[in-house]
Amino acid sequence: MKITTPHHGCAWITGASSGIGAALAVELANRGWKVAISARREADLQAVAAQHGNIHGFVCDVTDRTAMAQVTTDIERALGPIALGVMNAGIYLPTALPQFDATLFDRTFEVSGEGHISLISSVAGYGGLVTSAAYGASKAALFNMGESLAMDLKDSGVHISMVAPGFVKTPATDVNEFAMPFIIEADEAARRIADGLAKNKTHISFPRRFSFLLRFLNLLPRSTYVKLAGRFMGR
Ligand SMILES: NC(=O)c1ccc[n+]([C@@H]2O[C@H](COP(=O)([O-])OP(=O)(O)OC[C@H]3O[C@@H](n4cnc5c(N)ncnc54)[C@H](OP(=O)(O)O)[C@@H]3O)[C@@H](O)[C@H]2O)c1
Image (cartoon, rainbow, N blue to C red; front, side, top):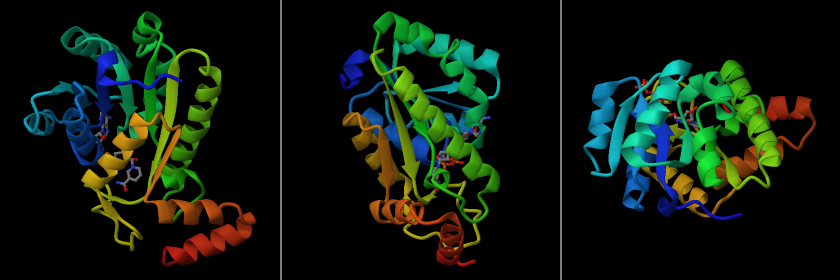
């Protein structure tokens, strides 16, 4: 599988007005990518774009299909074909998923016959976690969908990767009142994601110790998993 590079086109990160998406925009721009960032908060997008000349903001709500189709056109007009799509926009991402095989990426990938779509899931998608009933279910669905897409698109030239961060310090986790083991900064998460993308990894998960621990716990009988994972997170 060919590795997608800045040579093939631009990168688009949804949900990049703060947190992991914003940090990843700066990281990819520093690695030579032209980066389109989208989100709803225009001022925050502009503040991220101001950090690097190769970052360009596009206001768009991922739950608005028409707006997403329009922003795809706008990005390609401004920056050229989208070669790397990082679907990062929080819990609203699943709402936008039907557009993967419909209007959003079709044209780009039909024209170029290559590309990379990265789905930002979470270690919360491996199994249930404290306070993650809705969130974890959506992230588990994302893994399932990404794996299916990876199989279906195997010979298409389009690479699918799934990213499973542990806890990352962002506005989203600042509200958590429970202990967040192995939490890392958004810059560090962005570096790990960019490294994984550059190696065409299918599964990018970090921090390693937390990810291994959760994957190990998920090999146990489910009742044991529920007991141990809950206890590990202070319940
Ligand atoms: N932080 C963690 O510990 C952690 C761990 C694992 C996975 N993740 C995943 O990483 C991704 C980024 O999360 P984060 O922690 O960086 O949170 P964050 O700082 O709150 O960022 C969420 C981003 O999503 C955007 N967004 C939310 N709803 C949107 C909508 N309807 N349309 C367009 N953009 C929307 C927000 O921008 P606007 O409000 O401006 O629209 C913001 O830029 C999420 O998918 C999250 O589930 C995070």
